[in-house]
Length: 295
Image (cartoon, rainbow, N blue to C red; front, side, top):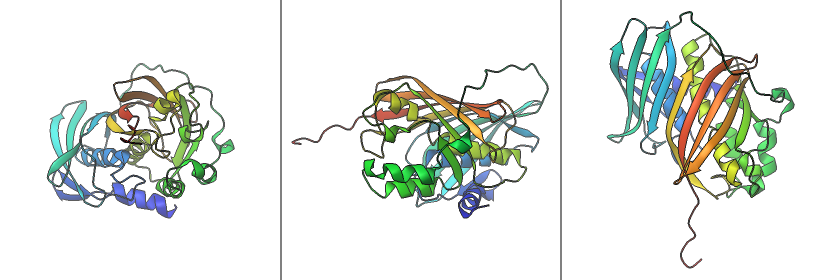
């Protein structure tokens, strides 16, 4: 296991300070706020630690309320909403400096047999045929507003091997494309056989690239090139079938609409064997910076 993955696992290993209160820290981010996927994953860890081990998350719904301060601890308070015969519901509020920054509701269920069907997995290239982040990012460093962004992005993603099937938004600025994007990902190392951990790690990764499809529709490169500003507003996930975060997963993403300074994106995560494992929907603020007066 590489050092970056161990750091990420340590980040998700929250400190329990009361029966239903947990404390987490943050890792350096490429932007001056807490990465949204981190706070979502930590909140799910907190909720999961108050639920019987045989019950795993089947859905979560979350709102990003305020930017998180990466230099301060985050306190997660879990509210035990319901413990039913089949389902368990938890609500989590993340607090910094006395104010809520994030709210999550999650539902858990023990495995049971039932009817099954799913959409087919879309075509995608072999993940091993695609460039790694360490190979791809330096090629585009000249496009970034800060030449150090490429290294910061590479460092931030060192725990996860994430590979774009097509050019990312920052590589095709000014060229509107179909609002669809695919990435393959897996952790850079093997993980323990803890199903909750695998779910939380996929929750962490799910926020990395989902709004890319919104940018592609308009030929925008994103915050790295400075032609949009934005942030996640809300995030929803449904976990359908078992998966492992240390094995290749295909994240197929698209954007059906953008309007009013907001963009909507949805994603499907498939196992390499073609099983639909997770569905994701996110809305984010996507704004074009206004020119400064006199410029």
